[in-house]
Image 1 (tube, rainbow, N blue to C red):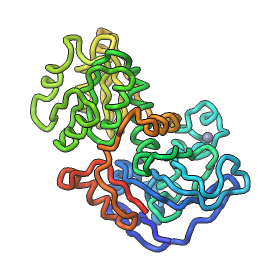
Image 2 (cartoon, helix red, strand yellow):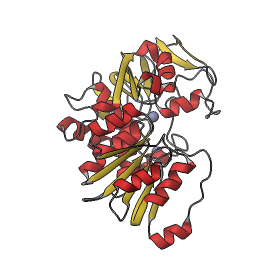
Image 3 (tube, rainbow, N blue to C red):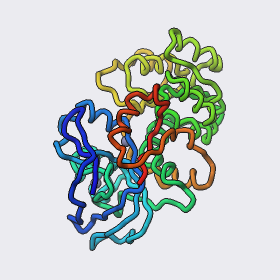
Length: 348
Ligand SMILES: [Zn+2]
Ligand SMILES: [Zn+2]
């Protein structure tokens, strides 16, 4: 089969690899129908994850069709169409039993096997460990490119942004970050009853997508003075919830500034340097700060939401290209502005 293989920072190639085989009785094999390039894949590409073994197949977001099952798999059968969780859930360790598979002790410190310590899904076929706990059926009528959003971008937006931020009816919500996660948070916040959703981004085509997704206001943060422009469109009391989906010091500090008294700042962004927590502001403003990594427990609900038509996240998908052009997808994602790229889906 063909797969996108990691050969070190900045080096990967679509090349021949042996087809995966069942290695444990809890495995399944899938024919990959769609995969995506995620920000985390770009981090790997830039050498942010030196622990990644050379020769590993890239990718952790996929939907596929099951081609073979291990002898202990009970929930799935050959031919099932499934969404693959990027967090591998062993289902039996203490963390997984508590619904915190991001801390699965069997699948490594963060449940991240696929396209990391194990071969991933940017390939024609893939082996999925602990399949009974790490796959979900895709309802009929949900296209592959929409289903794939529910395993990572939407799960992060919902679990770590909207739910941690406790968005509720009548809230004014600011979402900082116009990537797939930030954009996914827009319809999910509206569904919880937010009446004002302000998207802060830097790419005009993504701000247009934000409006299509239901944002009430968009603010271009590539221009000076954006924090004041956000404040100008908020109610007098400020933002009830600020969702940070960038992972930078400046944007998180802006979130602390914009949040209302008794508000919540929900950080989704992956930060590469420490940011001081303004405990004196938190005390005087009574605001709550949350952060963390999703465990993908919301994926079945998110699949129902897209299947029912309750939300439409299609503006997030900008490109569908053949799987064999996976390497090109990285280049397109790197030059997102030039290529007008938000989420690039690789299809079989
Ligand atoms: Zn991802
Ligand atoms: Zn576990």
